[in-house]
Image (cartoon, rainbow, N blue to C red; front, side, top):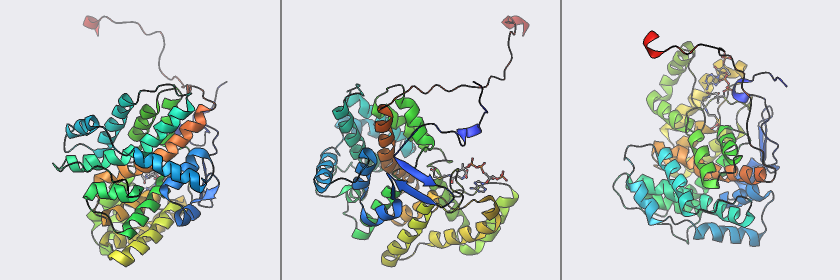
Length: 377
Ligand code: CMC
């Protein structure tokens, strides 16, 4: 049956899912029916990950067990550390993460994706080990030693510790955990779809997550958070914002961190991140980038409101990470660490009713062309 071609599959459902939902007109995002505002206020990243994976909030006993399982699996094999050491020091950390995750699959070769228990342990390992790989590359590429995880530190605390060798202040830990919750899931986006296409071949979960990481890297998706901070640094001061925005509008160029396929209002995650910035800066002092960002939002509103183009999650997240001294290139890997929970939740869901993705194309090439010998072309 012929279908209309929808570039970018815009508006085309690719799966049935109960993992999360976005109301793009009202600016509402729910994970398993619970609004993200409530999760950011009351939950933790690991509890939210469990919610996404298993469809309901865990009991205390379930959360304790899951936290213990993840904590026990944070270490990475020395061969993965050796692999990371061999990567070029100027390589992008998303590539290092993708390579590290793909290599993980070689150490845990259970390929039977109908084995529910094995799938649980794969999900635990991936959620536990991604931060260790990210932090290991951040240190090893600068010639510093890899810092192994510390079991007594919670998920976010431990990641920041592995990056800096310092137990971070409480406000950093709380802020970072909220950032992970906000990035944990977002319906049928490019990286989730990529993972599901790979998963539909019954590939192992390490390959699934490695392929999602590849899709997340691009600047139209997760890579935008890096470009936002580059842009804010380039602008430099609030006084230079208007000129910059005018010039972008004239050149018909996009402003990174703005616009979304689904949201036609401000992304609720951007609103929460602004509140988070407020709380963080109260304790640590403001960020000059934040002042520039607020001015960009104001100036952009004058041009983009008619097109319903507003700040998305990537507009404020980089400012938070920058304030914590995290290098620009690690913003998207942090997004991936969080989004692994969402990717795996969709993977669990799809395995219950898997069907190989094999869409159609509309062929608009020629037919019956002669083969011309090379000397006559
Ligand atoms: N700056 C200026 N104008 C924009 C922007 C922007 N960032 N985004 C969309 N528009 C305009 C666009 O020029 C077009 O105008 P016109 O109809 O006059 O040609 C209209 O809005 C529709 O844009 P589109 O690119 O066709 O819409 P889309 O649904 O394909 O794009 C998007 C969604 C996210 C790719 C796009 O908004 C974009 O490129 N944004 C910048 C990159 C970015 O911030 N990405 C992060 C997305 S959210 C987090 C994530 O998914 O990882």
